Image (tube, rainbow, N blue to C red):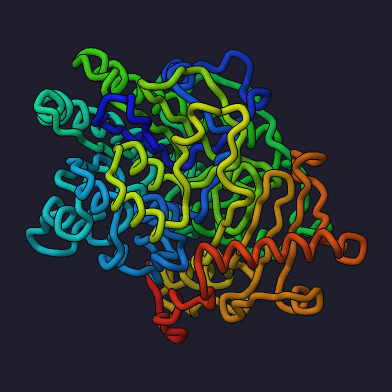
Length: 532
């Protein structure tokens, strides 16, 4: 919370990238230029142990903008996918609703990805997306139609437009609100580095994949080479301790955007595309920072910077994001630049996207009754309490991650979709008896995950129950930062540790979700024919 000595109110700018993983200092290529993200680090506090609480894009954003876990807000699938809900259920208060009660004018720019009808091409005649955002989700202004991330190179084509519309808003409404003493919240959602999702060779893929893959653009920024070697890229998908979900995901992804050669040369080219996409979005971030300076409102604006999820980029032989809990997939950057606190700080405390909404609300100086309601309804914590003691402060003992996407569950389902597209043959629904759903606990050292079938949501309390219904992963990041040894593959030798982490996971679920029996999946039709 803000101290009484601080002048109120501050404007709040939330900048979100899509698919930007956390890089340790020693993981960046030598001389890699990110001047504007580095400027944010110099201005603020970097939270080095910040994790998402759901994946992929839509489930994570559902949690970011409601402060609730995926099993509660119910958006378990990306809205553009065939088995997904059409939208984030409007009965849940969003961050904008809370901010309105705190006296803030909430605005949204860029990728939304939380309502199918608000993804182009629009299905409804004369669809008014701005009115939808205000009525359903509480945002007073919205520009996002340009940013359908379901299309290749969307970030390359549209992130500059997102930055431009944001700057236009700042020059007009943002400046006017600031000068009148009316605080605003501005969420700016860039697409890149999400463009990497569609990396591939279109000629090689032919017409057998669901989406047309693309190589990197010819723009000069994509010509730089960084020679990055992914972590454990040679690791076998059939190796000891690998959940079967990883193989199914790999094969499904190959059917969606085409196969990739598992060679160092190919992974380096892949990472060149990814890293250069990060450089490109860094330019757009720089434009926003420059505009705040030019308008004279930098000292009145709190800036938060993060990503909705990470990117495997070859690590452990995988790319993208999905049914995995590796660092590359779920560990993301988080920076808070607060004019009232010294910049250039680093915080090692464990934090989560579950803490994002309470943190933004805590930055408003909200009155005590609203503060009590937030604490009662949202399970996260206010990260601003760590700004004054970033080196020794602590927020939580452990964090929870959930995953229930059906699209990546069964590669045979994706294969049937591909055949449907080519030949019009019937599709078969995904096999919900495959173990591709996840519940994970991480306490800062040990990362414990249960992979289970969507048809068998379970809360095991014994080793027998654990092994009967789950594939297990357990990593000791203090001794094994590269996550090469799955201690969960040897339940006899590691039984005490496994049961202890399992108890911790069950407690997190009980405290932050409550009953977790897969109720958000109850409306699915197992015999449904899906098309993309």
